[in-house]
Image (spheres, rainbow, N blue to C red):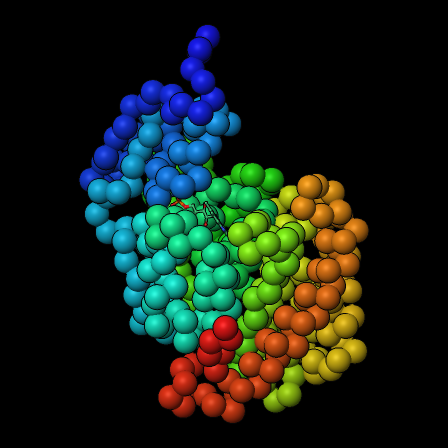
Length: 313
Ligand SMILES: Cc1cc2nc3c(=O)[nH]c(=O)nc-3n(C[C@H](O)[C@H](O)[C@H](O)COP(=O)(O)OP(=O)(O)OC[C@H]3O[C@@H](n4cnc5c(N)ncnc54)[C@H](O)[C@@H]3O)c2cc1C
């Protein structure tokens, strides 16, 4: 039995592998006793509090090739597992072309958290209240996973099979994230509702649409903090696709999205308030996204960048 105080970091073995294969092997060998360490801003406080009990910590700090950000040949963006939120926030290609993702990262008020914390660490914590996960999901991001059975790409909503869980199997780590290119007529918007700017979201929404010939060709409505995992409001998306995005249709889609939520009462909000504000935020985000999509269609190829999303704050 441990006599250690809850605020003291319990002893652990610390590893600094040089390759993904070595990191994966260490994790596989130690099973539930081992965890990956990226920026450590979530893991270390949890180990200190005793809510995560592990004896083996596998740092990714010295693993080659995990700290990258690049434009893909197809025009999307790719970044590695050790890329910090701060580096992403300062990346011009992300800010100009993927404005809703930029907004999701930019609104994180803690500079320390952004400088230490990685985007992939944020995803791997698997809290349903992440702002970053729905923003990436709305852009159809894929999670790159490597492990004993090889490499695979997991679409974002599928990365969260249940509350607090990821789709990672034994020995698997996330190596990076791929965000595909956005087409002409694409627009996206991020919105969340927080008690104070430093707090976790009560509701977090990213909507993305593609408008062509006056019709919504594709809709993405990714929601956080209103169900056990982040999820895509697929019924609401289906209502929009193939239709003209009128005020009435946006209102109906927002109501459908609210019905798809499974919120809880907790210290931040009631379930009822979460459901009601989801409807409001989804409607606002869809209006913003549709406006930006129309600008994108008109400005495609102009100097402002591919999406016309620009910077909103
Ligand atoms: C003050 C503060 C404010 C915040 N505000 C916001 C906010 O407004 N919105 C928001 O969305 N988030 C917010 N966060 C959350 C923050 O973004 C995450 O805690 C952080 O990004 C985690 O990254 P990390 O690199 O430190 O992860 P770590 O603490 O190193 O790891 C977290 C978890 O992910 C696992 N992990 C990490 N990398 C990998 C990998 N490559 N493969 C497999 N597993 C991995 C670890 O084993 C661990 O279980 C805030 C955090 C703080 C402390």
